[in-house]
Image (tube, rainbow, N blue to C red; front, side, top):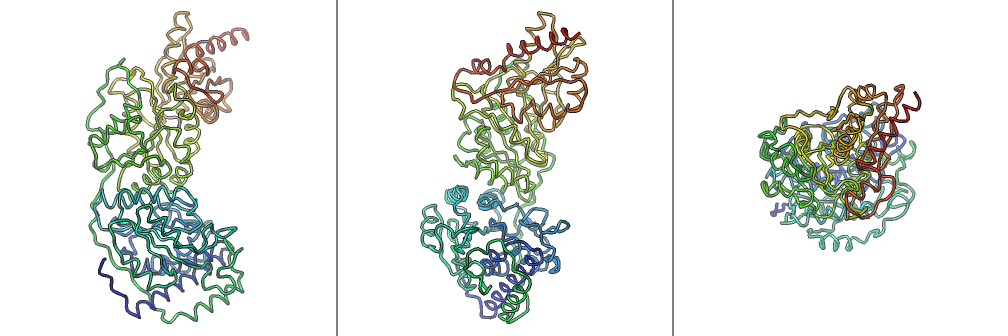
Amino acid sequence: MEDYHKPDQQTLQALKDTANRLRINSIKATTAAGSGHPTSCCSAAEIMSVLFFHTMRYKVQDPRNASNDRFVLSKGHAAPILYSVWAEAGFLQEAELLNLRKIDSVLEGHPVPRQTFTDVATGSLGQGLGAACGMAYTGKFFDRASYRVYCLLGDGELSEGSVWEAMAFAGLYKLDNLVAIFDVNRLGQSDPAPLQHHVEIYQKRCEAFGWHAIIVDGHSVEELCKAFGQAKHQPTAIIAKTFKGRGISGVEDKESWHGKPLPKNMAEQVIQEIDDKIQNKKKLSPALPEEDAPVVNIRNIKMPSPPTYKVGEKWATRKAYGVALAKLGHANDRVIALDGDTKNSTFSELFKKEHPSRYIECYIAEQNMVSIAVGCATRDRTVAFASTFATFFTRAFDQIRMAAISESNINLCGSHCGVSIGEDGPSQMGLEDLCMFRAVPNATVFYPSDAVATEKAVEIAANTKGICFIRTSRPENPVIYNNNEDFHIGQAKVVLKSKDDQVTVIGAGVTLHEALAAAEQLRKEKIFIRVIDPFTIKPLDKKTILESARATKGRIITVEDHYHEGGIGEAVCAVVVGEPGITVNRLAVSHVPRSGKSAELLKMFGIDKDAIVQAVKVAVSKSRNAE
């Protein structure tokens, strides 16, 4: 790519004509829809024309081909121009563009993977570049293929910190197969963008992050061709000075037009003006890719051997996660691990030790780490496991939410959950994570209670579609399951039962072990309880919970190292709602905790064995009094 050849005049004119056709179709589509962002599309018309019909190499009729160049539209509101590109290329029917935003059309208001040409959903601004970094990292280090990754960003979203987390990542790992294009059209939604047209400031910022940065006239196809033709041993940022609403007379570079379609009569006039500039109706065809991406199979990944734990041995589930992940890495060379500088706490360092080339250090940038994982997992290239403290995933909730919209199959492990971590205090305690992940569509939430269950959770997560979250704990607790125990999503384990059980107690992680200790104490007083380990909090095993509740006179006590809101107690309430004669008493962390020893904190918040014993006795005596 170093030997740049200037395109001939015919090609340059064809690219200009293509850009104007993209403008026309974006205006037509948004006017037909009665909503959308034609001005944001028009500023990017030349960029999209040059990218898709001169620079990028891909198979039009096979948009997800593993060897194709990748494109991420980070400024997702400019979706109509992306759709116009695929109509221009011949993948979509032009008439379909007029169904933009209709309920029965695949062409939604922002890009989603229901469209074969979209790898990741965008529209929550500032996230596209992180995903593009994950794709580029995969291309460079895992696939070792020649495909390149292009990401188009708006200047408004450059205020998002997550963009600069991604910029830092790409600069550090010298992702020379990645090109970011800044569409600096000056205007945001309600105001001009903070730097307006000061493109030289963007250039200095990019260079400071380790990027090769080129300023271009974003409406000059010749300058764009030249800029895209430059290859360096670092990522490239093309800072394109553009005008919002380019080509729309009376609207170009004017405020108060963001997200507004042109009225029909105005649209017709503007379309005629733009059409008059088109010299040739001939369409360009993109170049084909070099087909050098390896064939990958990530289906049905099985642990190479069963777990090797002894019942009664003490293990922290966070450490068992690291052991399991390292082991899974031997089963398939597409299993990868990511962490945010907590690998010696989450124990993902055990994976790094055995598979150093498949470990990605994302440093303290959790939002970007999630986006990188999403990018790595696109087109089924990898099985990604990303880990940090459970509480630090809360800052990445928008990335997790968008990952679900992206139909991504990423696996996230959150360690150090709850007050049981002890002295580090509330800033480090995951107490909202179950609530957060339960709210994510199609997510699976694992909460393993011993080392064997953790190993099984890792293996199942690797083969499960959607977002998987594995919640691990810091304290060491005894192994309670045999190595041959079978685990399934949505199937709880009844860990303790007898025909004389009076109350069902549901706990997970540290609180399951507290429940077992409480059962031991209560047994001495001839009070018997049934103890359930849910294994997955979402989905929850409704059948087992209801059967146990009915066998224990409808009495359920839930106990969890999590806030009341959105945790195990509320999940259990949701599955028993409307069932007659069932009461649920929820023991959970009731307010912001503090530093202290693990046992002291469990006691302070009423989720230890003594609190369970007390709650059971109250439940039993209540019903005796009622009788």
